Image 1 (spheres, rainbow, N blue to C red):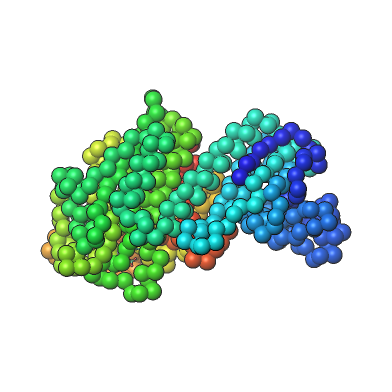
Image 2: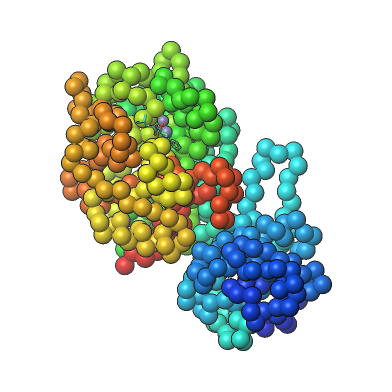
Length: 478
Ligand code: BES
Ligand code: ZN
Ligand code: ZN
């Protein structure tokens, strides 16, 4: 899809079709016809006037995420038409409210389809989008400024779609070694350093918790370490991702219905890959390390068991009481690895860690946890900037006690049923060194990472949760 900007007024652009975002039904070009057709300009409502080759899409308020959604609706609608080019005016002079970039993102996010496993592929018909730099009142934005914003929005949305595609790929096609190859490919294309640790190397690193989780799988576990190292970076950031290419629950086997969709359990790792892609394409002046624990949690004679005691990389002993709480075991070792290898200013981990987080916040919202209120606030701002939703879940010393074990230093599950998203994060906290406590933040993306019923600009499947807000946050480091 080619997206371009011209200084011409929208009426003077040559395109087959016009898209108009309508905040209201008044003062629209085809007000009379729209009224006749009962168009109310409610959010994502569409009205196509074939006589004038104009598609109207309703937008409820002047907020960037509503435009993102409306643009996605427009492009999805047009995928059923035969037109190959469209034009539209500017809705936000010089992107003051982030509306121009939101529309660009909406078009790219909305055009995403996953058809790898379909015999019939959906061929995109719309291939040219022409923006005017002028709004309908003929006030002009600076074309060069818009072009920079366009480039950035494209990078962000394409990285989100890249993450979606990886998440959607089946566990048979995307197992740990394959994820490592994908990371290597990204490293080659985007000039990143890439180090892969196979099981022998993981053993040398004493990463036994991670190794034990993957023991029953026919696929070798892999640790992926990508680094983006610009000269004179303003900060160093480590991003750690849970990359469970499949989570059957292990011997504490998931019920059949809960196992469906557990290919999603690599979403944290795939988000880290998407972030690395965007950061390197944007040439951000930040050193970023992406560390992914790629493992498959399966059953078998060699499987790790409830009652086992695992020794993590930092020497802590962990009593396994439920093999389905595997993500925290993999992350424990990856967090230790990250802190040992990289002296970072910020340490973020991304994981589809708990069903409890979905119970607490619903399907659309990422759970943010950590000791630093400041960090949580700044990430919440970045979520607002990019149309992602986050909610902060608070730690407390009472929940911490629920992880006590009679036989080991800590248990991998809480001894009480509630507050599971927080106790999981507090488990991870045991693997964060004292001097790093305020640098660390945990993202539980179990809710938004995988969409089972399409919402906004997210179709069925992987959503790419975490990518856009994190890149926005990294872009704002002073
Ligand atoms: N990968 C799951 C969490 C999950 C559940 C993600 C639903 C997305 C949707 C995780 O490994 C898991 O199974 N967690 C258990 C923890 C429990 C055993 C303490 C859970 O949430 O039930
Ligand atoms: Zn699990
Ligand atoms: Zn899991």
